[in-house]
Image (cartoon, rainbow, N blue to C red; front, side, top):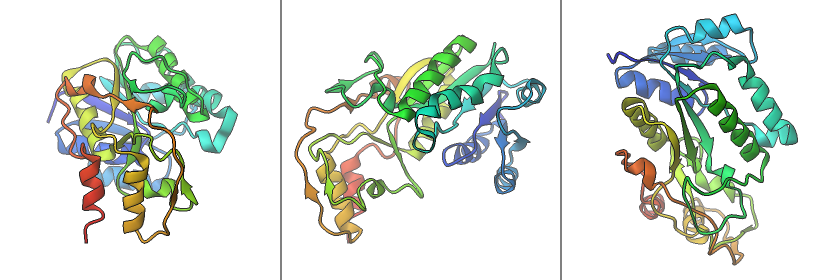
Length: 274
């Protein structure tokens, strides 16, 4: 058992498997929940479940964060559901944490969506954020807010997530065509995000890090092959996008991050074989 006490805020598609993974790695942790089925899953994983439906009273959060050394925030921004209200809603959700994070290492799962869709070519952590979606603006606002709350903040900007129950082909399954088919694909597998978070916890690294597979096949090649394998009707390829953003994740790799799903061309071929 490792000595650090952890807390995970947000036990959803990313947070729940993160809890199980970290417990398997020997960590003791508390995780928030709102629904009974999540509480049961947390208990089964060996976590200490904590009923928390933000925003809540300060005393409740003080109890949740008691003796916590590392807090991982995996709350989704809900940009599609909330639209223009997403940034304000996200900050309202985080607001009760004000003044409670001093001395805590906060790890926030953000998104490469903060860079926006207009940026061209290679994107590093030094690239100026220009979010142009509701979700992108929400997580950008959260990054800035959290930076004011703790001097030990790690921001993980995740490329498009895929993994169990999140099939990459869902982006285009019902579309008539693959738009900007020459654009590079920027994806990261959920399992690789878990190992990156564990790496940050163990090293204590702070700052901003992009997370993406090292390979960037074109959208046409990657999604086209997966859609054909899934038995979907052939999609038209709309040209364009060859100079679109390509996420560089060299900074986190320098810490020792070694993703299992790093070659998206291999992933594509393995899912189309047979």
